Image (cartoon, rainbow, N blue to C red; front, side):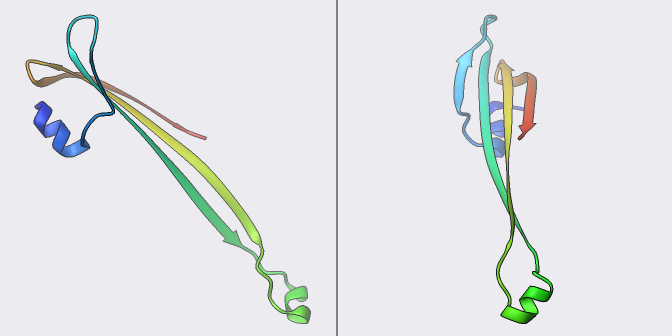
Length: 85
């Protein structure tokens, strides 16, 4: 895959550098936050005093780092790391 093809699929990299062997290296760092809300009913209390909003909110962050090395304008090697917390 050429550099132009990688850029058209992934967009512009966050960092461009060269490694110790002189290979051009592109680094992509992506972070996403997911928020979810689950509502619950109050049972008998909602019948007696009317419905009330209650529930729980959870938040998760995901990261993805992709490192692509190019030789002669073509992908030589790549690696990635993802995490979720």
